[in-house]
Length: 373
Image 1 (cartoon, rainbow, N blue to C red):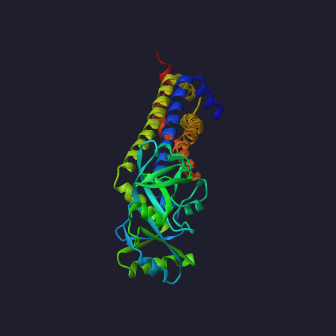
Image 2 (cartoon, helix red, strand yellow):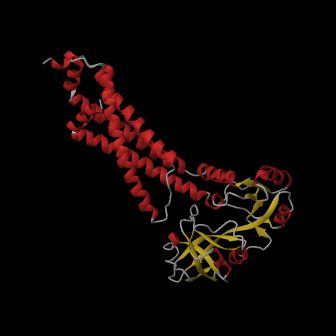
Image 3 (spheres, one colour):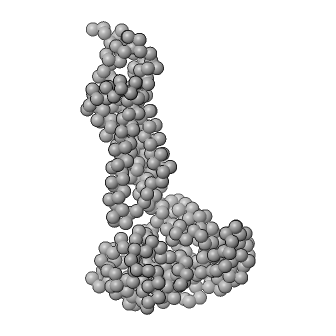
């Protein structure tokens, strides 16, 4: 069966090539858009996603870690007294304006963390160590944001809200959704952002025993007014849901993926159908010499599956080249194994339904009809 299917494919090279390219295009578009969507959803909740082990205590109206409100610092002291709580780390986030030596300026999301614990960041250090934040005026930026930050070099001085700081270290691939993260100590962040010392943006609660997490969360939510406690995974999901629900990102990427499916389905379907019409006498001959409808159906399906598998392999290679290419610009993501399997399954489904056009045409064919002049 496979040998016969390959002969049919090789005999009609132009149409087989067209079906193959349609499959490659479909696999690439689906993989490309899925990858970029994963990158965006990861950046939506990057701050909390990279600090999942803590309970996050935020303003009770906050469902998006990118838009934290203000909390009285005294709440942190009260949380520290709860049973099962080991440490409570305040976190400050603030939007600030930075100005660079070349005259350009940019907006930053400044993350202030308590040292030496560094709960909340930075993470994925590329050069330097977190401890450089002990130095006066130290700020850690990201390697991939250098161009957006006036070609800022390591060790170079710049201004935040008119106050001098310097680029003390670099993370790599640490992206904020729609912004740029910069890390410093909590005291320096308050100073640079002109924030009151009695305010925090969130508290990161570390437990003695993670098994008590839900009990501590319930206690905080039931007894503390004006704040809400979330586990790291819960706040990650809520942040992504909030951003997607208030933007057109999901619809935009979903539409492109649907069109990619349609492209693959239509191209494979029309190409196989056209190939069958061109070789109608060959299929008619097969039926005339005893080939059953089941055999013909399996023959066409085998051709479709061969094209689908070949297209998937080529499409995956092209997608991987794309993934590694844009990773050099800071758009970093990876496909989990289950997603690659899903891509393969989708490709096979596209090929299967695309082949139905040709199968229906051949099944209805009367063997003798193709020999009548």
